[in-house]
Length: 198
Image (tube, rainbow, N blue to C red; front, side, top):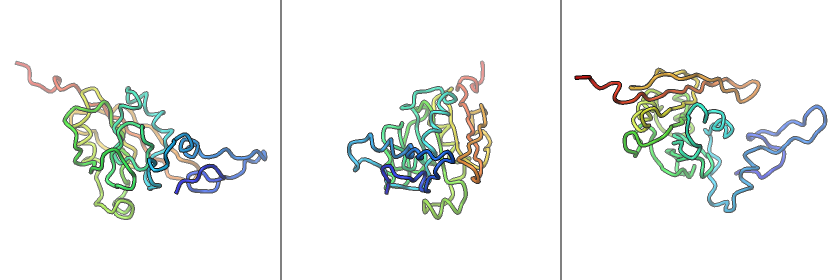
């Protein structure tokens, strides 16, 4: 259950700053207060990347925020692009396995993925077999348009999927004492570059 205000940040009590100021409420709570109908809100499910990350990655994806397909979206807020998750309790826009997306080839401007990072996470959190990054990326490369970009958040820096090349690897830290993750950005090449010339 989401708390509206209070002294909680990311599920943990926020520490009072050393200068004695009152800690600011978590950003996610402020965002939820702006919504009218609590029934439309996703459940508090584990496995969502920080919302602030989207704004940081958008310049690398080169598209509008609303044009991003979020695979393994977790409890990402409604209106944050097209949200796909295998869990109905996350209330995604589309319930689907990220390895078999129900979208036509080359139909998406950009894709962001935040899958479970280990087989244990996949089993304990999602109740599914581990979705290998290579399988998720292959499907993302299928649905993204030529020159469209794919970003994946993971502990691994995966190899580029078919018909894609590496653009950038960014470090993602969620705070002191937490493992750093990689945000790897790929770009799908134009189809005609692979076609044989007569």
